[in-house]
Length: 477
Image (tube, rainbow, N blue to C red; front, side, top):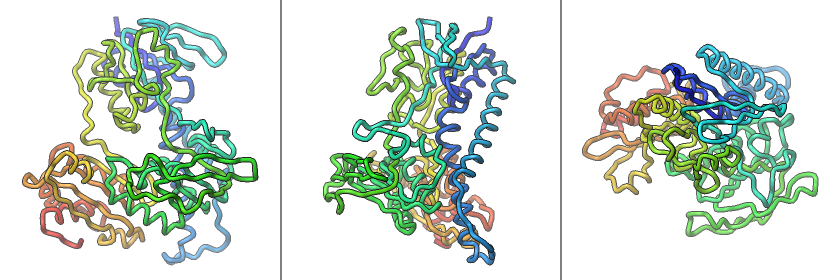
Protein backbone atom coordinates (compact mmCIF):
# COMPACT_ATOMS: atom_id res chain seq x y z
CA UNK A 1 0.00 0.00 0.00
CA UNK A 2 1.30 3.47 -0.92
CA UNK A 3 2.28 5.81 1.87
CA UNK A 4 -0.38 8.51 2.27
CA UNK A 5 1.01 12.05 2.38
CA UNK A 6 -1.19 15.09 2.94
CA UNK A 7 0.14 18.56 2.22
CA UNK A 8 -1.65 21.61 3.60
CA UNK A 9 -0.91 24.44 1.18
CA UNK A 10 -0.47 24.42 -2.59
CA UNK A 11 2.18 27.11 -2.89
CA UNK A 12 5.72 26.76 -4.29
CA UNK A 13 6.72 24.60 -1.33
CA UNK A 14 3.59 22.49 -1.12
CA UNK A 15 3.05 21.58 -4.75
CA UNK A 16 6.74 20.83 -5.32
CA UNK A 17 6.70 18.58 -2.24
CA UNK A 18 3.69 16.83 -3.71
CA UNK A 19 5.33 16.25 -7.07
CA UNK A 20 8.47 14.83 -5.45
CA UNK A 21 6.54 12.60 -3.04
CA UNK A 22 4.33 11.28 -5.84
CA UNK A 23 7.45 10.56 -7.89
CA UNK A 24 8.71 8.42 -5.02
CA UNK A 25 5.49 6.40 -4.97
CA UNK A 26 3.34 8.16 -2.38
CA UNK A 27 -0.40 8.69 -2.58
CA UNK A 28 -0.48 12.48 -2.29
CA UNK A 29 -3.27 14.88 -1.40
CA UNK A 30 -2.72 18.64 -1.59
CA UNK A 31 -5.19 20.80 0.33
CA UNK A 32 -5.49 24.39 -0.90
CA UNK A 33 -8.12 26.89 0.25
CA UNK A 34 -7.48 29.49 -2.46
CA UNK A 35 -5.58 29.29 -5.74
CA UNK A 36 -2.71 26.92 -6.46
CA UNK A 37 0.64 28.65 -6.48
CA UNK A 38 0.32 30.28 -3.07
CA UNK A 39 1.44 33.79 -2.22
CA UNK A 40 4.29 33.76 -4.74
CA UNK A 41 2.13 33.19 -7.79
CA UNK A 42 -1.04 34.96 -6.69
CA UNK A 43 0.03 37.76 -4.34
CA UNK A 44 3.77 38.23 -4.58
CA UNK A 45 6.62 37.23 -6.87
CA UNK A 46 4.83 36.87 -10.17
CA UNK A 47 2.18 39.65 -10.17
CA UNK A 48 4.65 42.24 -8.91
CA UNK A 49 7.11 41.26 -11.67
CA UNK A 50 4.36 41.64 -14.25
CA UNK A 51 3.79 45.16 -12.93
CA UNK A 52 7.53 45.83 -12.96
CA UNK A 53 7.81 44.73 -16.58
CA UNK A 54 5.02 47.10 -17.59
CA UNK A 55 6.67 49.93 -15.66
CA UNK A 56 10.01 49.28 -17.39
CA UNK A 57 8.38 49.21 -20.83
CA UNK A 58 6.75 52.54 -20.03
CA UNK A 59 10.10 54.02 -18.95
CA UNK A 60 11.77 52.79 -22.14
CA UNK A 61 9.03 54.34 -24.25
CA UNK A 62 9.40 57.63 -22.41
CA UNK A 63 13.14 57.60 -23.06
CA UNK A 64 12.98 56.18 -26.60
CA UNK A 65 14.30 59.36 -28.22
CA UNK A 66 17.69 58.78 -26.60
CA UNK A 67 17.95 55.54 -28.60
CA UNK A 68 16.96 57.02 -31.93
CA UNK A 69 13.31 56.01 -31.72
CA UNK A 70 10.63 58.62 -32.42
CA UNK A 71 7.29 57.80 -30.82
CA UNK A 72 4.46 59.97 -32.14
CA UNK A 73 1.55 60.48 -29.76
CA UNK A 74 0.86 60.28 -26.05
CA UNK A 75 2.19 57.51 -23.85
CA UNK A 76 0.59 56.67 -20.54
CA UNK A 77 0.34 53.65 -18.27
CA UNK A 78 -3.03 51.93 -17.95
CA UNK A 79 -3.42 50.21 -14.57
CA UNK A 80 -6.57 48.36 -15.62
CA UNK A 81 -4.71 47.01 -18.63
CA UNK A 82 -1.76 46.00 -16.44
CA UNK A 83 -4.08 44.18 -14.06
CA UNK A 84 -5.84 42.42 -16.94
CA UNK A 85 -2.47 41.25 -18.26
CA UNK A 86 -1.58 40.07 -14.77
CA UNK A 87 -4.74 37.99 -14.42
CA UNK A 88 -4.23 36.36 -17.81
CA UNK A 89 -0.73 35.25 -16.86
CA UNK A 90 -1.70 34.12 -13.37
CA UNK A 91 -4.59 32.03 -14.61
CA UNK A 92 -2.32 30.35 -17.15
CA UNK A 93 0.20 29.55 -14.42
CA UNK A 94 -2.48 28.18 -12.08
CA UNK A 95 -3.75 25.88 -14.81
CA UNK A 96 -0.20 24.77 -15.45
CA UNK A 97 0.29 23.77 -11.81
CA UNK A 98 -3.05 21.97 -11.73
CA UNK A 99 -2.07 20.04 -14.84
CA UNK A 100 1.28 19.10 -13.31
CA UNK A 101 -0.39 17.73 -10.20
CA UNK A 102 -3.03 15.85 -12.18
CA UNK A 103 -0.41 14.26 -14.41
CA UNK A 104 1.33 12.89 -11.28
CA UNK A 105 -1.90 11.43 -9.95
CA UNK A 106 -2.05 13.93 -7.07
CA UNK A 107 -5.43 14.65 -5.53
CA UNK A 108 -6.20 18.34 -4.95
CA UNK A 109 -8.79 19.11 -2.30
CA UNK A 110 -10.16 22.65 -2.52
CA UNK A 111 -10.93 23.99 0.92
CA UNK A 112 -9.51 24.85 4.32
CA UNK A 113 -7.45 22.11 5.89
CA UNK A 114 -7.42 21.64 9.66
CA UNK A 115 -5.75 18.85 11.59
CA UNK A 116 -8.53 17.01 13.42
CA UNK A 117 -6.27 14.55 15.25
CA UNK A 118 -3.23 12.33 14.74
CA UNK A 119 -3.39 11.02 11.17
CA UNK A 120 -6.41 13.02 9.97
CA UNK A 121 -7.09 16.37 8.30
CA UNK A 122 -10.58 17.83 8.01
CA UNK A 123 -11.13 19.70 4.73
CA UNK A 124 -13.95 22.25 4.67
CA UNK A 125 -14.91 23.42 1.19
CA UNK A 126 -16.13 26.93 0.43
CA UNK A 127 -19.72 25.67 0.30
CA UNK A 128 -19.42 24.39 3.86
CA UNK A 129 -19.23 20.71 3.04
CA UNK A 130 -16.46 18.72 4.65
CA UNK A 131 -14.48 15.52 4.34
CA UNK A 132 -11.76 13.78 6.30
CA UNK A 133 -8.44 12.89 4.69
CA UNK A 134 -6.09 10.43 6.37
CA UNK A 135 -2.31 10.70 6.35
CA UNK A 136 0.74 8.69 7.29
CA UNK A 137 2.91 11.78 6.86
CA UNK A 138 1.84 15.42 6.96
CA UNK A 139 3.63 18.38 5.37
CA UNK A 140 2.51 21.82 6.54
CA UNK A 141 3.03 24.53 3.91
CA UNK A 142 0.31 26.97 4.95
CA UNK A 143 2.36 30.15 4.44
CA UNK A 144 1.74 33.66 5.70
CA UNK A 145 -0.31 36.82 5.12
CA UNK A 146 0.63 40.53 5.23
CA UNK A 147 1.16 41.81 8.76
CA UNK A 148 -1.54 44.23 9.92
CA UNK A 149 -0.87 47.09 12.34
CA UNK A 150 -3.47 47.87 15.01
CA UNK A 151 -2.77 51.63 14.93
CA UNK A 152 -3.51 51.88 11.20
CA UNK A 153 -5.23 48.68 10.01
CA UNK A 154 -5.75 47.86 6.35
CA UNK A 155 -8.95 49.22 4.83
CA UNK A 156 -8.19 48.33 1.21
CA UNK A 157 -8.81 51.91 0.09
CA UNK A 158 -6.41 54.35 1.71
CA UNK A 159 -4.33 51.99 3.86
CA UNK A 160 -3.19 49.12 1.69
CA UNK A 161 -1.54 45.76 2.21
CA UNK A 162 0.80 44.34 -0.40
CA UNK A 163 -2.16 42.21 -1.52
CA UNK A 164 -4.33 45.30 -1.98
CA UNK A 165 -1.67 46.92 -4.17
CA UNK A 166 -1.95 44.03 -6.60
CA UNK A 167 -5.66 44.69 -7.19
CA UNK A 168 -5.48 48.46 -7.78
CA UNK A 169 -7.30 49.80 -10.84
CA UNK A 170 -5.76 53.26 -10.80
CA UNK A 171 -2.28 54.67 -10.41
CA UNK A 172 -2.18 56.90 -7.33
CA UNK A 173 -0.81 60.41 -7.62
CA UNK A 174 1.13 59.88 -4.39
CA UNK A 175 1.92 56.85 -2.25
CA UNK A 176 3.71 56.46 1.08
CA UNK A 177 5.22 53.03 1.59
CA UNK A 178 5.84 51.98 5.19
CA UNK A 179 8.76 49.58 5.19
CA UNK A 180 11.95 49.80 3.17
CA UNK A 181 12.46 46.06 2.93
CA UNK A 182 12.25 43.93 -0.19
CA UNK A 183 8.52 44.36 -0.86
CA UNK A 184 8.49 48.06 -0.04
CA UNK A 185 11.48 48.87 -2.23
CA UNK A 186 10.15 46.86 -5.16
CA UNK A 187 6.81 48.67 -5.09
CA UNK A 188 8.56 52.02 -4.66
CA UNK A 189 10.48 51.37 -7.89
CA UNK A 190 7.37 50.24 -9.78
CA UNK A 191 5.09 53.11 -8.82
CA UNK A 192 7.76 55.75 -9.22
CA UNK A 193 8.31 54.50 -12.77
CA UNK A 194 4.58 54.70 -13.42
CA UNK A 195 4.54 58.35 -12.38
CA UNK A 196 3.50 58.19 -8.72
CA UNK A 197 5.13 60.50 -6.18
CA UNK A 198 6.58 57.91 -3.78
CA UNK A 199 7.81 58.22 -0.19
CA UNK A 200 9.42 55.34 1.71
CA UNK A 201 9.54 55.22 5.52
CA UNK A 202 12.01 52.75 7.05
CA UNK A 203 12.57 52.16 10.78
CA UNK A 204 16.20 51.06 10.40
CA UNK A 205 19.22 53.09 9.28
CA UNK A 206 19.21 51.86 5.68
CA UNK A 207 17.01 50.47 2.97
CA UNK A 208 16.96 46.66 2.78
CA UNK A 209 18.25 46.35 6.37
CA UNK A 210 18.94 42.65 6.04
CA UNK A 211 22.22 41.01 7.12
CA UNK A 212 22.21 39.09 3.85
CA UNK A 213 22.23 42.30 1.79
CA UNK A 214 25.56 44.12 1.79
CA UNK A 215 25.42 47.68 3.07
CA UNK A 216 27.04 48.93 -0.14
CA UNK A 217 24.01 47.69 -2.09
CA UNK A 218 21.65 49.61 0.17
CA UNK A 219 23.72 52.76 -0.28
CA UNK A 220 23.65 52.53 -4.06
CA UNK A 221 19.91 51.75 -4.11
CA UNK A 222 19.25 54.87 -2.02
CA UNK A 223 21.25 56.93 -4.52
CA UNK A 224 19.26 55.55 -7.46
CA UNK A 225 15.95 56.12 -5.65
CA UNK A 226 16.88 59.74 -5.06
CA UNK A 227 17.60 60.10 -8.77
CA UNK A 228 14.05 58.93 -9.39
CA UNK A 229 12.73 61.55 -6.93
CA UNK A 230 11.70 58.93 -4.38
CA UNK A 231 11.77 60.41 -0.88
CA UNK A 232 13.26 58.14 1.77
CA UNK A 233 12.98 58.55 5.54
CA UNK A 234 15.27 56.15 7.40
CA UNK A 235 15.43 55.87 11.22
CA UNK A 236 11.73 56.75 11.13
CA UNK A 237 8.44 55.10 12.12
CA UNK A 238 4.80 55.86 11.37
CA UNK A 239 2.85 56.39 14.57
CA UNK A 240 -0.59 57.16 13.14
CA UNK A 241 -2.48 57.66 9.90
CA UNK A 242 -5.48 60.00 9.59
CA UNK A 243 -7.76 59.04 6.70
CA UNK A 244 -10.59 61.46 7.46
CA UNK A 245 -9.66 63.76 4.58
CA UNK A 246 -9.36 63.04 0.88
CA UNK A 247 -6.01 61.34 1.30
CA UNK A 248 -3.88 60.25 4.24
CA UNK A 249 -2.04 62.33 6.82
CA UNK A 250 0.78 60.27 8.26
CA UNK A 251 2.49 61.02 11.56
CA UNK A 252 6.24 60.35 11.81
CA UNK A 253 8.64 59.93 14.74
CA UNK A 254 12.20 58.89 15.46
CA UNK A 255 12.43 55.10 15.29
CA UNK A 256 13.04 53.24 18.56
CA UNK A 257 14.23 50.27 16.48
CA UNK A 258 17.02 51.90 14.49
CA UNK A 259 20.59 50.68 14.78
CA UNK A 260 21.89 54.20 14.12
CA UNK A 261 23.08 55.69 17.43
CA UNK A 262 23.27 59.14 15.79
CA UNK A 263 19.78 59.05 14.33
CA UNK A 264 17.83 62.29 14.41
CA UNK A 265 14.06 62.88 14.39
CA UNK A 266 12.54 63.32 10.92
CA UNK A 267 12.57 66.87 9.58
CA UNK A 268 8.81 66.74 9.19
CA UNK A 269 6.31 65.42 11.74
CA UNK A 270 3.74 64.55 9.08
CA UNK A 271 3.52 63.74 5.41
CA UNK A 272 0.47 63.53 3.20
CA UNK A 273 -0.26 61.21 0.31
CA UNK A 274 -3.23 59.81 -1.55
CA UNK A 275 -2.65 56.33 -0.15
CA UNK A 276 -0.38 54.49 2.27
CA UNK A 277 0.93 50.95 1.74
CA UNK A 278 2.14 48.96 4.75
CA UNK A 279 4.89 46.48 3.85
CA UNK A 280 6.53 45.62 7.15
CA UNK A 281 6.38 41.86 7.35
CA UNK A 282 4.30 38.71 7.30
CA UNK A 283 2.14 36.83 9.81
CA UNK A 284 2.05 33.00 9.92
CA UNK A 285 -1.17 31.20 8.99
CA UNK A 286 -0.83 28.60 11.72
CA UNK A 287 -3.55 29.70 14.12
CA UNK A 288 -6.37 27.72 12.51
CA UNK A 289 -4.43 24.60 11.54
CA UNK A 290 -5.46 22.59 14.59
CA UNK A 291 -1.87 22.05 15.70
CA UNK A 292 -3.07 21.64 19.28
CA UNK A 293 -4.81 18.39 18.33
CA UNK A 294 -1.42 16.77 17.75
CA UNK A 295 0.40 18.65 20.49
CA UNK A 296 2.56 20.71 18.13
CA UNK A 297 3.54 24.02 19.69
CA UNK A 298 4.63 27.12 17.79
CA UNK A 299 7.05 29.95 18.49
CA UNK A 300 6.32 33.68 18.68
CA UNK A 301 3.30 34.66 16.59
CA UNK A 302 2.95 31.11 15.26
CA UNK A 303 6.18 30.06 13.56
CA UNK A 304 6.84 26.32 13.37
CA UNK A 305 10.26 24.94 14.32
CA UNK A 306 11.87 22.16 12.29
CA UNK A 307 15.25 20.45 11.99
CA UNK A 308 17.40 20.40 8.85
CA UNK A 309 15.27 17.55 7.51
CA UNK A 310 12.18 19.79 7.83
CA UNK A 311 10.78 17.56 10.61
CA UNK A 312 8.87 19.05 13.48
CA UNK A 313 9.24 17.42 16.90
CA UNK A 314 6.69 14.87 15.63
CA UNK A 315 8.33 12.26 13.41
CA UNK A 316 5.49 12.13 10.90
CA UNK A 317 4.85 15.89 10.62
CA UNK A 318 6.98 18.23 8.50
CA UNK A 319 6.79 21.96 7.84
CA UNK A 320 8.20 24.07 5.02
CA UNK A 321 8.13 27.57 3.57
CA UNK A 322 7.32 30.91 5.11
CA UNK A 323 5.50 29.38 8.07
CA UNK A 324 8.95 28.54 9.48
CA UNK A 325 9.53 32.26 9.97
CA UNK A 326 12.48 34.63 9.57
CA UNK A 327 14.87 32.32 11.42
CA UNK A 328 14.98 30.44 8.10
CA UNK A 329 14.84 32.10 4.65
CA UNK A 330 11.41 33.27 3.53
CA UNK A 331 11.74 32.94 -0.24
CA UNK A 332 9.70 30.97 -2.76
CA UNK A 333 12.67 29.08 -4.20
CA UNK A 334 13.77 28.14 -0.69
CA UNK A 335 10.29 26.82 0.07
CA UNK A 336 10.46 24.67 -3.07
CA UNK A 337 13.78 23.15 -2.04
CA UNK A 338 12.49 22.61 1.51
CA UNK A 339 9.56 20.82 -0.12
CA UNK A 340 11.92 18.45 -1.90
CA UNK A 341 13.76 17.71 1.34
CA UNK A 342 10.55 17.17 3.30
CA UNK A 343 9.08 14.88 0.66
CA UNK A 344 12.21 12.74 0.47
CA UNK A 345 12.42 12.39 4.24
CA UNK A 346 8.72 11.60 4.46
CA UNK A 347 9.40 8.75 2.08
CA UNK A 348 12.22 7.33 4.16
CA UNK A 349 15.26 9.02 2.66
CA UNK A 350 17.79 11.16 4.54
CA UNK A 351 17.94 14.61 3.01
CA UNK A 352 19.10 17.83 4.64
CA UNK A 353 18.39 21.47 3.89
CA UNK A 354 21.37 23.82 3.62
CA UNK A 355 21.06 27.61 3.53
CA UNK A 356 24.67 28.62 2.84
CA UNK A 357 24.17 29.34 -0.86
CA UNK A 358 20.67 30.77 -1.20
CA UNK A 359 20.42 33.42 -3.92
CA UNK A 360 18.39 36.52 -3.16
CA UNK A 361 16.60 38.31 -6.01
CA UNK A 362 15.20 41.79 -5.39
CA UNK A 363 13.37 43.37 -8.29
CA UNK A 364 14.02 47.02 -7.66
CA UNK A 365 15.21 49.39 -10.40
CA UNK A 366 18.08 48.54 -10.77
CA UNK A 367 17.77 44.91 -9.71
CA UNK A 368 19.66 43.31 -6.82
CA UNK A 369 21.14 39.83 -6.62
CA UNK A 370 22.87 38.44 -3.53
CA UNK A 371 24.33 35.15 -2.38
CA UNK A 372 26.53 34.02 0.48
CA UNK A 373 27.97 36.25 3.18
CA UNK A 374 27.88 40.03 3.10
CA UNK A 375 31.03 41.81 4.20
CA UNK A 376 29.35 42.64 7.52
CA UNK A 377 28.38 39.02 8.14
CA UNK A 378 31.89 37.80 7.35
CA UNK A 379 33.49 40.32 9.70
CA UNK A 380 30.99 39.45 12.44
CA UNK A 381 32.06 35.82 12.11
CA UNK A 382 35.67 36.86 12.67
CA UNK A 383 36.73 35.87 9.17
CA UNK A 384 39.74 37.43 7.47
CA UNK A 385 38.37 38.70 4.16
CA UNK A 386 39.04 41.06 1.32
CA UNK A 387 36.55 42.61 -1.07
CA UNK A 388 36.53 43.80 -4.65
CA UNK A 389 33.99 46.03 -6.37
CA UNK A 390 33.45 46.67 -10.09
CA UNK A 391 30.95 49.05 -11.69
CA UNK A 392 28.58 47.87 -14.41
CA UNK A 393 29.48 50.94 -16.44
CA UNK A 394 32.78 49.27 -17.48
CA UNK A 395 30.84 46.70 -19.53
CA UNK A 396 30.24 47.36 -23.21
CA UNK A 397 26.84 45.65 -23.01
CA UNK A 398 25.73 47.93 -20.17
CA UNK A 399 26.69 50.97 -22.23
CA UNK A 400 24.95 49.58 -25.32
CA UNK A 401 21.63 49.04 -23.54
CA UNK A 402 21.89 52.26 -21.53
CA UNK A 403 21.81 50.61 -18.11
CA UNK A 404 25.10 51.57 -16.48
CA UNK A 405 24.04 52.13 -12.86
CA UNK A 406 25.22 49.51 -10.40
CA UNK A 407 28.11 47.45 -9.16
CA UNK A 408 29.16 43.94 -8.20
CA UNK A 409 30.96 43.25 -4.91
CA UNK A 410 32.79 40.01 -4.15
CA UNK A 411 33.75 38.90 -0.63
CA UNK A 412 36.77 36.59 -0.66
CA UNK A 413 38.50 34.71 2.15
CA UNK A 414 42.14 35.72 2.40
CA UNK A 415 44.60 32.91 1.90
CA UNK A 416 42.24 30.38 0.33
CA UNK A 417 40.80 32.93 -2.14
CA UNK A 418 37.45 31.15 -1.68
CA UNK A 419 34.40 33.16 -2.74
CA UNK A 420 32.27 33.72 0.36
CA UNK A 421 29.64 35.98 -1.15
CA UNK A 422 28.66 38.17 -4.09
CA UNK A 423 26.32 41.16 -3.87
CA UNK A 424 25.36 43.03 -6.99
CA UNK A 425 22.99 45.79 -7.96
CA UNK A 426 22.53 46.57 -11.62
CA UNK A 427 20.85 45.46 -14.87
CA UNK A 428 19.57 41.87 -14.71
CA UNK A 429 21.36 41.27 -11.40
CA UNK A 430 18.68 38.75 -10.43
CA UNK A 431 19.68 36.58 -13.41
CA UNK A 432 23.43 37.16 -13.11
CA UNK A 433 23.59 35.98 -9.48
CA UNK A 434 23.24 32.35 -10.59
CA UNK A 435 26.93 32.04 -11.50
CA UNK A 436 27.89 33.42 -8.09
CA UNK A 437 25.50 30.99 -6.40
CA UNK A 438 27.24 28.05 -8.07
CA UNK A 439 30.60 29.49 -7.01
CA UNK A 440 29.57 29.75 -3.36
CA UNK A 441 27.86 26.34 -3.38
CA UNK A 442 30.88 24.57 -4.86
CA UNK A 443 33.51 26.51 -2.91
CA UNK A 444 35.17 28.01 -5.99
CA UNK A 445 37.96 30.54 -5.74
CA UNK A 446 38.00 34.01 -7.22
CA UNK A 447 40.86 32.88 -9.45
CA UNK A 448 38.80 30.04 -10.90
CA UNK A 449 36.08 32.50 -11.86
CA UNK A 450 38.59 35.02 -13.20
CA UNK A 451 40.04 32.37 -15.50
CA UNK A 452 36.63 31.29 -16.75
CA UNK A 453 35.92 32.79 -20.17
CA UNK A 454 32.82 35.00 -20.16
CA UNK A 455 31.12 35.81 -23.46
CA UNK A 456 31.50 39.34 -24.80
CA UNK A 457 29.62 41.61 -24.94
CA UNK A 458 27.37 40.46 -22.11
CA UNK A 459 26.34 41.65 -18.68
CA UNK A 460 27.67 38.33 -17.33
CA UNK A 461 31.19 39.70 -17.80
CA UNK A 462 30.69 41.52 -14.50
CA UNK A 463 31.58 38.28 -12.66
CA UNK A 464 34.84 37.88 -14.55
CA UNK A 465 35.68 41.54 -13.97
CA UNK A 466 35.07 41.54 -10.21
CA UNK A 467 36.81 38.18 -9.75
CA UNK A 468 39.87 39.43 -11.65
CA UNK A 469 39.97 42.49 -9.44
CA UNK A 470 39.69 40.29 -6.34
CA UNK A 471 42.85 38.37 -7.30
CA UNK A 472 44.82 41.50 -8.13
CA UNK A 473 44.58 41.55 -11.91
CA UNK A 474 41.93 44.22 -12.56
CA UNK A 475 40.92 44.52 -16.20
CA UNK A 476 38.50 47.34 -17.01
CA UNK A 477 37.31 48.12 -13.49
